[in-house]
Length: 256
Image 1 (cartoon, rainbow, N blue to C red):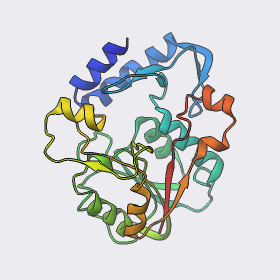
Image 2 (tube, rainbow, N blue to C red):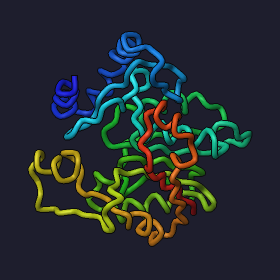
Image 3 (spheres, one colour):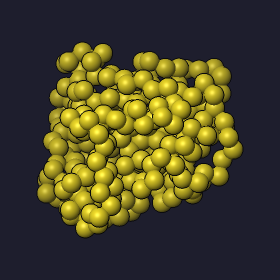
């Protein structure tokens, strides 16, 4: 199964994968139902989660029902337990880059947010836009989600500046990235253009860098106040395992 999923991820374009997954997801959820693991996003239980990874495959990380990964489930728990995102009685404007399927329909149904999605290629995007040249006004959004996007962007400084520009003063942004916490500094090399070599070095064929611990300070240099939220340390270890979370993953919670 691991080799099959690896082949699918590396050969089928992402927009097509998104459409196909809508059909396949309920079948997988039915076949793998059980009680060993729980997806906290929808509360469903499974005897196993699916493997995932463009290079090295990780076992038990992809939920059969929501298709969430570790980072998505961690973010959901953080929003649910530590913020008023789901409960606020005041309508908030939310901008979501490259919207994840597991969040898209749920966020769209919320009556307490005005929800806008954006991306250059995603079929789920309301607005087709370049993150380095956004068509939105200054100080427009209360909340911005931009997760696992910046590692794809050659000029991530410009992208961060645009995120800062369109976020309201006092607003919150969550900008998750694949991060190697053993690295002090971010690594990039524009001379590496071969897709297989990029996957080997950067973790995915369309990534252009590997972020290190200096990622948070780069966000601060743009103007954000950054909280490095080690949220799995606040969750009981049995639930970290039950929810299939990545222990030690940091959520970059940013404020303007």
